[in-house]
Amino acid sequence: MSHADTTRVQTVIGDPVGENAPVPRAKLEAIFADIQSDLRYDHELNGCLNCGICTATCPAAHYYDFSPREIVQLLWTENLEGIYDAMQEKIWACAQCYTCAARCPFGNSPGGLVMLMRETAHPYCAASSSSRARSSTDARSRSATHSSALSGEGLIRAR
Ligand code: SF4
Ligand code: SF4
Image 1 (tube, rainbow, N blue to C red):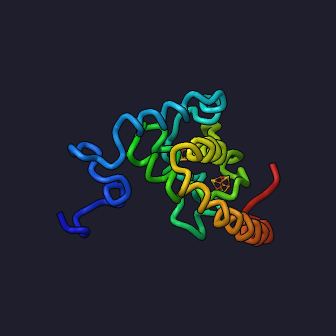
Image 2: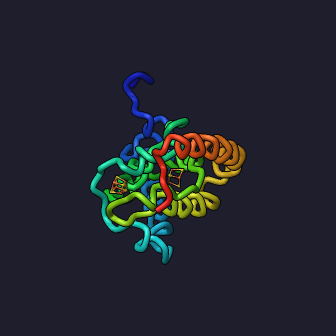
Image 3: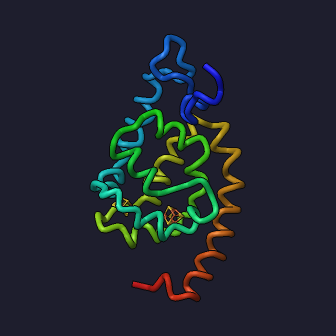
């Protein structure tokens, strides 16, 4: 199969149903079980309308290949391969501002779910988590600037 025929997930973790999957199914299931076992998980994920309000108000989504809607959907639909892929890079773009939690009509906290995934990533994806710490700091800085700009335009208001 040529590179052009592979999806991003296949590039990162290989063919999850192939005989020689680089990331065994058991590991993907263990990672998701760890995320779900956290006491905060059920509080921060109540369902998802896939409405995209969280992404529309997310400063990190403005700058990076990152969408809190996508993260929530991956968890809600138990997309284990997608969850693992997101833990390699995407989740490290979140600035932890929690604008998403204030806006979600379902009462979800995508930013909180990202934090759970980051905490879980350390034992399972140590290389990616440590290398992303610095870029996450950069994201916070950029997002703070972006949030200030939005506030100035009246697009974000205190509740
Ligand atoms: S997490 Fe909430 S705001 Fe985001 S897509 Fe789902 S329902 Fe909409
Ligand atoms: S907490 Fe993260 S996902 Fe939520 S709005 Fe802020 S940067 Fe986006």
